[in-house]
Amino acid sequence: DVIRLKLSALLAGIVGESEKNARIAFAQIKAKKRCVLVLDELDKALSGRHENQSTDAGVGSNQLGEVLQNLQEIADDRDLQIFVIATVNRTDGLPEELTRPGRFDRCWGVGLPNSDGRIEIGKIHIRLKVKGMDPATIKDRAWKRFATATDKFTGGEIEQAVKDAHRLSFARAMEGRTKDNLPGKEECYPTIDDLLTAAADIKPKAVTNKDDVEKTLNF
Image 1 (cartoon, rainbow, N blue to C red):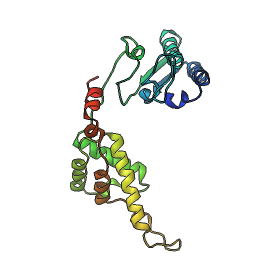
Image 2: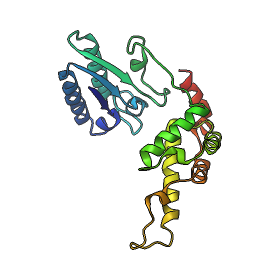
Image 3: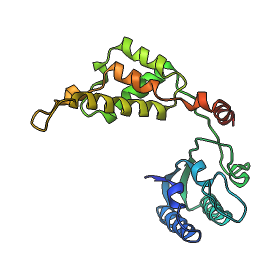
Image 4: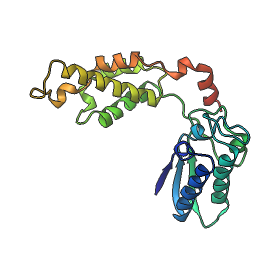
């Protein structure tokens, strides 16, 4: 089994209550004995911690201690076969207790997608976000224009561009329509112009927060 645990949501409650929530969640995970545990966006949950208090940017030391204790118990218990993966978008502000040697066996950085990668990510999200649309509806030459327009975009920013493009195409298809004259599904499909317009409205973090992104990529 693969279990995705979003600690930022789990630890968002009242101090004391959130530790209890964490204990319950980890107890259920350890009861499975064998699984892959994905701690998604761990930086949102644990960065910005201040000693003995919680803030809007992170969690308190008690909450952090609860998480680290459970991770250590998973690592020490030979009866458990739980493979833990943690993902972060930013590395600055992560607690030293989390990043010390031995806490995680390996650290990998995932850089920005290249031109071919941006095209493939765009096609994936066309399939996921636009029901019934074949990405091949948009010609290869047009996809290359999309790749150029999304230079320095992350996968998440490309996803947002596709979602915004679909909203644009849907709004255009609905212009002047009534409930008795709704557009067909294909009329709502985004075009390359919709994708380019949506991409132009997104400012990639690799440009607006260049130093922070480079620091994360070089962590």
